Image (cartoon, rainbow, N blue to C red; front, side):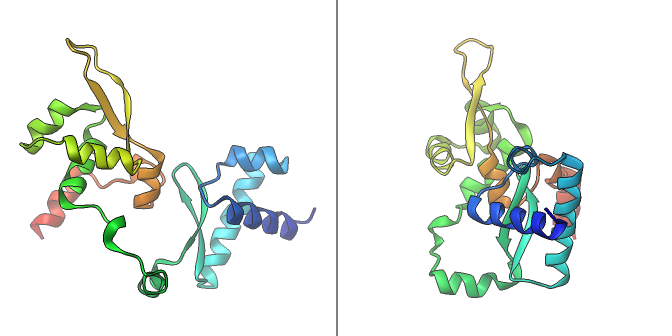
Length: 176
């Protein structure tokens, strides 16, 4: 198989998946070494960027995914009649931010930071699969520990939690 054919196969696999595909998933399907796959993916990512396509290949949520170019988002929203139901409320965003930065965290700690009951918000975030139960804290009552999910990474378009801005960066932006 030529490199062009390998790239075409990678595109086809990413296209039909709809979700991020890991290097190991591609490796198992294509029978190629991970280094070769990584090089082919890097070349594909660059090719899509250079032709300024409506589609991009991005490294996201510990895998690779075909996504639409954010430049065209206003037209895509109009085309698909996207409603605001996919958006998160301010309390949901606040709760999600606390969980992302403090995970694993129990509900009592979360509510102490927020200063309000978080039952409804936690349920909403669980329903949207942006957070999950990561276990139980080894204290009396053994409360549930919450953390973010792969869907969280996808929702925000980041590869992993290290891509979140640091609290110092956020404070600097807020001060500006």
